[in-house]
Length: 247
Image (cartoon, rainbow, N blue to C red; front, side):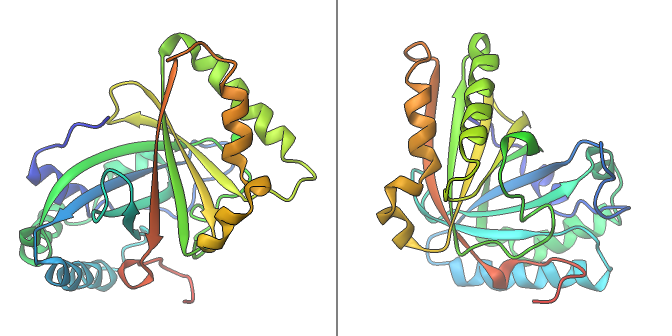
């Protein structure tokens, strides 16, 4: 799905800093995500180091929000995800002290984990029902993340299905979700659907699950045109920094 970059690239990328806050209306809103696999027996050291690195950003008044999650189910179980959301892509070209950022990352958390992936996404608000990360809210405790890899020839049909599900959600008490399109870091056309869950009990309510509605409609597309992979992420408020938001 995604090709891991060189370690130095990850370290530098971790500290992307905004020159402005949220984008103005009509501007593309994007984000960057990174994943790490802590070394065996070093998870606590990784967490401690990552907290110190967040403090580095706080001290420099970094306006970039960073959200953290643990993957608790799926192929990448036990890896850590961090990401920034609600930014203009142009803002990612403007970093404050990237050399110092990379040096601090190398000294704090990087020795305790292996960087496994990074990818850039674009928010698709017209296909989403909720965008908590872009408005800098604290997200629910769990999020089910389903990655859809789509054959280029059925991209338009896939987006049409997402739009149908979004329209069908009107007036229904479905769980809320956010749709992102991968713009860099994927081998195929790729969409990430984040379904926000307060806890495991939400899986008892199948009639509220938008993924069920989506799956029914995707079955009408050509066989093999869409492949999916599901993960469950648990929010780490202690490994998250969102400027200008009371916790």
